Image 1 (cartoon, rainbow, N blue to C red):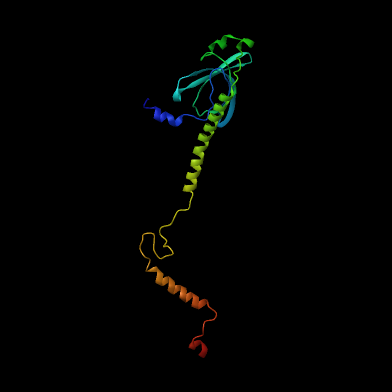
Image 2 (image 1 turned 45 degrees about the vertical axis):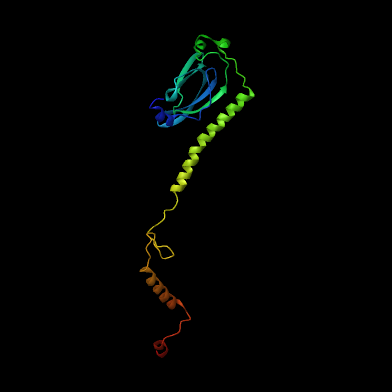
Length: 200
């Protein structure tokens, strides 16, 4: 294992489906023009996968107006918005360079039929990718909820008369009770009049 593998592991994408040379794919590429971002779809046959790890690339070939166009994409690049597998091809080579010299029906690739076991394995892999993709978002939501909670103010004394520092709030308690008694006497309508009020 290389020293850089631990750093590269953070940037490896896990949301892309499994594909191999001979498969027809749709690559949704993010294109930025004049400050705007749009999605451009490039559909063609995968003629090679090369490299490994963060440096892995794949080449897609299509025929546009009778001219062969090939485009190489970094597999783990953030410029790839989405990758869809349209059909799976049955080929016996890892590099399909022979398609460059073929035209028309000779350039067609026979479709590979998947068995029940392969379909189940693909479905399980997609479920794992979906779970892996949704796990970070759920964790981020919990972290935001934890950060967004109201802070506890340590300066205010608690109802039991003990402050957050653990010391008893003795000085504030008597004055508060005295003020409460004075306000209650002033507000109560049934208070008895004093002798000065009766004489005057």
